[in-house]
Image (cartoon, rainbow, N blue to C red; front, side, top):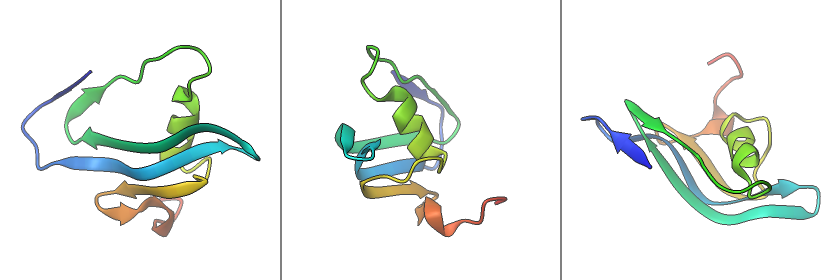
Length: 82
């Protein structure tokens, strides 16, 4: 559950993201919005893709399909130190 404080909207967002390793797809077609100034918990059973999603959000893993956005800009467009 995400409980948002008053804000201007989602800072981190995925659009139709499919994530996995090599040929093994972990999760398909994810649309996620993480609002600014909020605390968000990602919960689920073992092996459902929680850590894989976090890796995609952190640019450690490139999504198979879809886009990860930070402030409306593709996360891959940022330099590593930004």
